[in-house]
Structure formats: structure tokens, C-alpha cells
Amino acid sequence: MSPSPLAFVDEELDALRQQGLFRRLRVLDAEQAAHASVDGRSVVNLSSNNYLGLTTHPLLRERALAAVREFGVGSGSVRPIAGTMALHVELERRLAAFKRTEAAIVFQSGFTANAGTVASLLGRDDIIVSDELNHASIIDGARLSRAAIKVFPHGDAAAARAIVAGLPRTQKTLIITDGVFSMDGDLGPLPALCDVADEFGCLMMVDDAHASGVFGRQGRGTVDHFGMHGRVHIQVGTLSKAIGALGGYVAGSQSLIEFLHHKARPILFSTSHPPSVTATCLAALDVLESDPGLIEKLWENTRLFKTGLAALGFDTGRSESPITPVMVGDGARAMKLSDRLFDLGVFAQGIGFPTVPQGKARVRTIVTATHTQAELAFALDAFGAAGRELGVI
Image 1 (cartoon, rainbow, N blue to C red):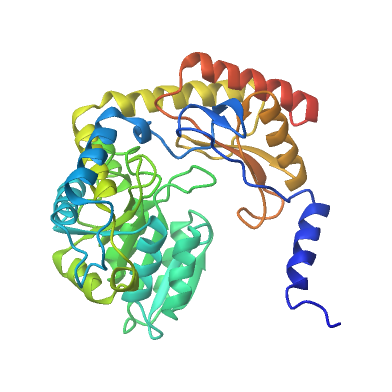
Image 2 (cartoon, rainbow, N blue to C red; image 1 turned 180 degrees about the horizontal axis):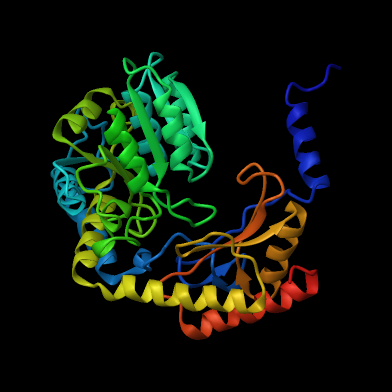
């Protein structure tokens, strides 16, 4: 009997087990909250992107239920055929106003927003200049575009300038960076990259998924945080993290958005958001614009937790955001730390290769606005106990 064509899958899984990197999915038993039930255990949740706690906000729940009653459970089509509802149009109008742009378009996810936009704007005769730690969706979009890809060292705007300076002026060039990098929690050098784009006539794009609802006035992102309005041609945001629901969006000029209506494959070939999700996102914008206390509390909790980890002796890398990695190095050791924390009542996932480079494994934490000081103190005690036990500190 010949070997199974899928034998390589078992071999890869066995290799992960031998390296201590095999993970099973942990299951959330109830709502996504600061204190959650995971695999039947009550834990302080430090693994969620739910920055502002909006997944369970009463207004968002109410609007979602009302939308289902009025509009049903699905949109029934892709956007260009019959899947554009009045709710979608209103959400895009609100997002454009929020981001201070002419227009916006909503995608099914932040991943499709990045990949679909890059792949539709660039072609084989074009060039993409990209930070080496940009999100996987940017990398996939760049590959799909078939453009030439030039990668600069993480956060090094001078290196990006040197690359662009050596390129032919006749080729369309896109410079792209994350606003906040999802694994390290640091900010991209947006002002310096905008200077490069202005100097050489490049398109400038920022993925603000982890900055949306976190940085800038009322959570408008790094473009607002750095005062770069009008200098970034393509702003990508998410509706799946601080907004608390699902989806992504692109904000920019009216022409850019109309181009994406006609060219972006996720828009052309995938069904649009259901009414409940769209209404939820509109409610989240209402909250952001009316309740600054949530973002203030997020940053208060972030400072408290970072200070506590530093006092314990943990290396938190270059984080400037609520994303705070606890650097471990070895992948298997990071997973052991994560598992020990779970035993102690703290849910903080270990992250290893290929999500992060070899030798840079970590336990990734995110503090939210809805964590109490008591919960954060409990988590810090657990980190201290597990870190000493495993020799991480």
C-alpha cells in the first residue's frame, strides 16, 4: 500500500510535538471578557484583542438584536450585486468622517482589507517597500500583486529611504507599514516614512488594525496620533479588535474607494457583512465618540501592568502599546510559561515561530479597559510565580 499523500502533514505535526510547539486550540466557554471561562476554567484573560471591552457593551448588544429583527440575519449577496445595504453605506460614511478622509469601504476582515487592497492596487510592473515585520495579510497581498517586494529592516525609515532612492522613478511604488506591530507592540515610524513618500512621490499605506480605538483622538489611529492627516493615501483599520465586532476597512480618497469597489476581489467575490455586525460597528463608533473614559482606562491599565512586569524583571521588548510581549526566546519554554500561567488562572498565549522569528518566542499579553486593578495584580502575581519557577526571571 502506497503512503498517504497527506503523510507529510503527520510528519510536520510530529516535528512540532518534538519541539514543544504543538498547541491545541483553547476554547472560550462564554463571552469574551477580561475575566473569562476558557476550557472550563475561570481565568484572567490577557489574550484578547478586545481593547475597550466592547464585545459585551450593552449598546452594541442592543443594536445587534434590533438589526436582526429589522433586517434579518444576512445581506444575501456580494456588494456589487445586491449586498449593499443602507447600513453598510452609513457605516462607511461614519468611518470616513472618523478617519478624516473622503470615503471608506468595509471589508469582511482586516486580513482581506490589507490583502485585497494591496493586490488590487499593485501589479507586476510595480514595487512594494515593506517593513520586515509587517502583518501576514500585507505580505500575502504583496505576493498576490506580483509586484517586486523590497523589505527594509524593522522600523528603519532611513533604510526605506535608501531603497526608494535607488528605484526607477517610472515605477509605481507603495511604502507600507503597520501602525502598531501586533507581536512587539511598537509603533511604525510613520512621520519619517511619510517624508520619504512625499520626497519620492510614493503611495503611503498604514495598517492601523491595532491602533484603531487605541491611539489618536477618540481612537482614530496613528495617522491622527502623529498628525499625518492628508499624507497617508491608504488607511486600513479593523472592526474586529477595539471596535469589538468583525471586519476591516480602508479609508482614503473617493477615487481610491471607487477603484476598490471595482477591483478588490474580496469585495467582488465575498458576501458583505450581516446587518447585526454592521449595526454593532455603528454603535461602537457612537461609544468611541461619546465616552473617552474607555481609552483613558485602557492606558491606565496598560501603564500599571507594564510597570508591574518590569518590576518583576521581565523583558517586555520595545512595546509602546497595550500589546506587551513577555520575551522568553526559546519556543518550548515560552509555551511552558503560557501553560503554567493557565494553571495559575491567567490566560496568556505563547507565541513562537513562524508567527515570530526563531529565538524570539514570547508570551503575548494585551491589557483591556475592562480589567480591574485586582485582576491585573492577580496576573502579575502569577507571572512572578511562573517566571521564577521556570527561570525566566
